[in-house]
Image: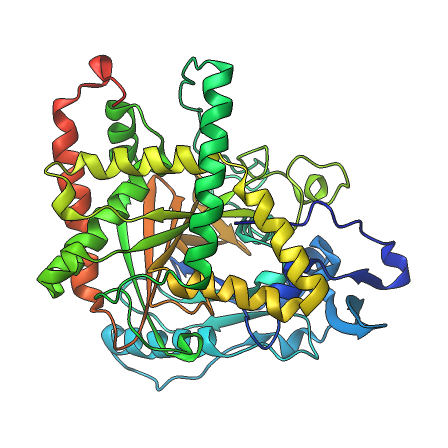
Length: 472
């Protein structure tokens, strides 16, 4: 399933109105309300004296949507520019004083859960910033950005966030990102490739429709029968892994970093399922893997994003790939989870089914309204066992208002699933964020299983030296 705004022609902003894209309709209504939370972990106590000035002079000018609300005019939703009262968007909670870092952890977790499950008011622009000035075990304080998915996808919103940050060592220098060298393409016959694409397209259309309508995953330790999970309190746990370890596995196996991370998440999920319920080894489970569909991989400047012919445009440009989670009973080697992830992702990319889905959503939107399209997307999410997405972050340490940021992670909130996993690299580390619905998943056991999955794959890859590795 692909979500793309490239066919939406923007009207002149001086008129104060811009048509809301189909994605904006789909993600912001009574059926669905999806947002992204980005959490900045501070190295020193937070000084927020410059925050309002930064928001007014740096954040708001990034994109007119940050100063707009959705209105309905002539039966169509549009973005309307409004005066922004910054004080309404910056929240600074008050916790009890003189508590331990462990106690503040609990307060922070509860506050984050409340932020995640609360819907945005529709009479104000769809973003908030929460400044938590209390230390916990991970940071001297936290700043949480909540940005509605109708404003843009993770690539757009992360680009906006990075525009507000600077390099801590030298603010005059630009941030740099890990290199993203494409894997070596195989020489394939044109006819073979075309026939393979046709078969994959037919298979994906049938499988995608059946999964979205009737093909719900089996119940398991990572998928409950609960409805209305969008409003269930969440628990967030993170796992930190060395980016050099991931690169070493990638080079040994001649796969991509995305393949390694996906295989690791799949193996960790199955280890958890087996530990919690032995019979779930055979459960049919799928993951929605979200991939950026832009031509360029690294973040570009905001000025470049908003150009009409930009190769990395602002908006929602991503695809849902429905990938089966391999069963533990199918493999004896941890590396098979990486190779299986690579095989399925390549197969899904070599398919035109995403264009069929675009057309299907357009038809639902045209004849039954945008909420019908939202219900289709919601069923696709609800029928799967998890959503998985990853993005790259800066190599260097960043600062906000000259205050160093020691950690950074993000998550998707408002989805009707028990488990969402997001991945972000920063300063040579990879951070897996496990967002779980409270009461359905054991956060400590899942975190341990993800760490075990990394160790199993890393150790198993040791017999594949980089200089002699061959692609499976």
